[in-house]
Length: 164
Ligand SMILES: [Ca+2]
Ligand SMILES: [Ca+2]
Image (cartoon, rainbow, N blue to C red; front, side, top):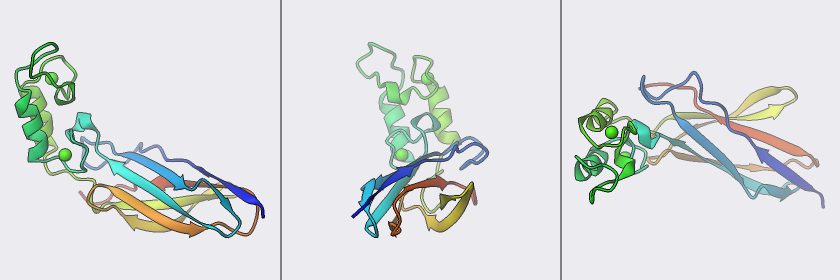
């Protein structure tokens, strides 16, 4: 019984975006990442909107919950009792209207229901093996069976952009 080491890579998200202001963050992992020949494994990934783009609570959408986090820290700075570094989106050391403006600019942008391609390295080429759609929190998964051949498999997730 041979083992196949599954190696997972993610793409650069360069050139694609959720909105003109949001560069998506993609993660992809294999569970388990070492499998026996023919055994099933699952690729699990997530499309995220960065905190700095306004998804402060990292739930996959920029909405009133994120506005309220900034609101609770409004006017604060390091050392202030209401200080929350996550609410200082532009990193200038104060939570103010500029941070609210970032959330407002990206309001309603979401990582949900976005197209994701899973690609596998075959020879020298990345070949699309599945089209997926992200769930509400931006996550996606794909279950595959390892081939009956010992070796290393390479996968990546790709966000082709799409409708926004
Ligand atoms: Ca959010
Ligand atoms: Ca700020």
